[in-house]
Image 1 (spheres, rainbow, N blue to C red):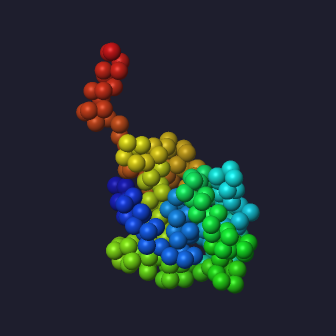
Image 2: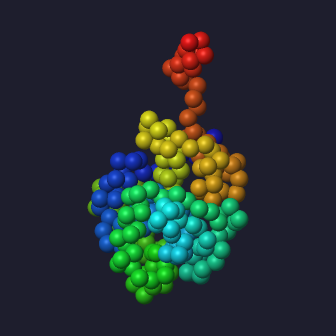
Image 3: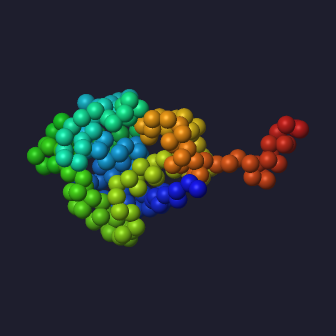
Length: 202
């Protein structure tokens, strides 16, 4: 049985963004709309972000000790597209943050995951009326996966599994399906079958 991941709904992401303040706002926005792991966000450099092309490249990560290193796997090294909202958010944030790392601490060094969760995420969730509902940054990665998978008519991107797998940095499609397979539309409901028959029969 596939795990029933608990992740924010689109309306909750909107509430979180409205509630986010200061340096935590751009971090949470990028987390929600790129699906980057917390370690990848903490290691993200401005040189990895191409605001003109609308992409961010995952080239390194920061471990729990704050040490910078390569992604855990070859698939972890990837390019993720970003939309206009994320681009504009980062443009504004770059004017305030001159350091090499996009989401660093005040001294320009790697931000600790504990600080992100305790000083950024939890207060923001509380302000958004979601206190205690999502305990860690991985919830944003699950949201991003669901957003990529959901149908366009439901507000998602309706991407094929290979694309979703690549964007998430999974080593194989089977990992994506094991974790998120239950979210992919079955496309075989009675209504959809009836419409498909009509398209064939004319």
